Length: 119
Length: 110
Image (cartoon, rainbow over all chains, first blue to last red; front, side):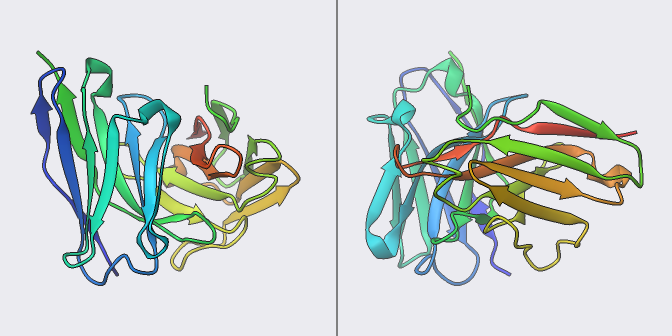
């Protein structure tokens, strides 16, 4: 069973950027999509954006347009999410998830990466 | 405000059945498959149901999903203490071209 291994926790200053990685333990993303979902403490799941490498399409939630970038490196089966212009409200756990293309079900999740934004 | 609407909480006794609703619109649930996720405290979400009513391998048949029009429902029978968790519905919104989740429902097993 494939696992998604995410990078470690980050502490960032307001205004800076964070880059979170998500590596598939085996196989590739070639027949799947990848989405990034975040969850602030005590809050629900929030879809940030996603990409489908074989279709070369990427979509972002309007809330994050211009601040987020999602990319994949198929040679290393790694996905990346960069969030810029960080503010305190971006403090959250960031999950990557493998997406079933037709159904948009998220069948494999990473364990999450905690990002703390604090001066 | 979430695009999909779920009740904040539901409860039922151990061994009983519970349903969790998820209401959307013609551009999301009305047009696309619905998935359901279980999130135990301190863990990542886990896929319970996809394609409205299909269970991934390893998910017991106590969990079921259905969809009608712009609403979907998750059913759980034979409730166990270990089912206490937050449950989320999710789908794609074709008008907004974004993924959407419900606000989540906290299940308490009495």
